[in-house]
Length: 107
Image 1 (cartoon, helix red, strand yellow):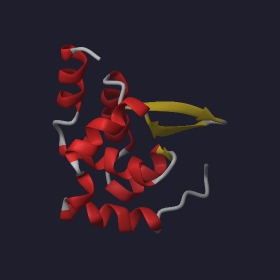
Image 2 (tube, helix red, strand yellow):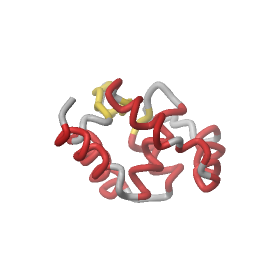
Image 3 (tube, helix red, strand yellow):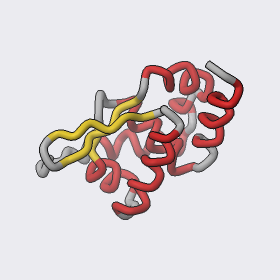
């Protein structure tokens, strides 16, 4: 791991929407864009753009399953997420509750 790699990962975590996405991905093995849209109440292009930033920073990976892309955390993200301790941020608990109710039937 290099200083630049770490700086890029920290930079990618510099937006509340991306922190929310990372927090949700900690809760499930993988999530599709439609599930993230439903929980976060953001449009598809907004969610996809933030996922692209997280992908570029090697924090998440996309896996194609049929016509849907499912996202999961990269193993390299786990040490950073442990330090960020997102599960202790009260606002993120609402997202977790909504995730439990946001199952996607389309994918």
